[in-house]
Image 1 (spheres, rainbow, N blue to C red):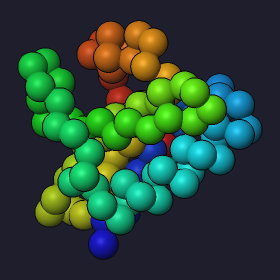
Image 2 (cartoon, rainbow, N blue to C red):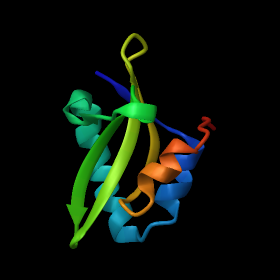
Image 3 (cartoon, rainbow, N blue to C red):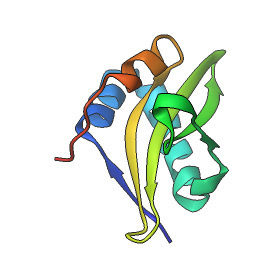
Amino acid sequence: MYRLENSNAAKKDIKNLSKDVQKEIIKQLEIIEDYPFNGEKLKGNLKGLYKYVFSFKGTEYRIAYEIFVEQKIILILMAGSRENFYKRLKYSKFSLA
């Protein structure tokens, strides 16, 4: 089984969302933890990363993550609505706390 790790950016992203959306993201992260390869592989400059898409109250959200197979770790990089998501992801630097 894989273990989830949140980058500092992901923690900040989730903290800035409403409580309802935070609860939904936690549910979606549990799905990612159980089925990490069900996400869609990203291409181009973001090759090697995955995205997981879900809708909540009429808004589409994205969770970007990287899978480290040998360590059995899923590193959550970003979470939020689709608006500017990929642009932010492309130019972000990630670290763990």
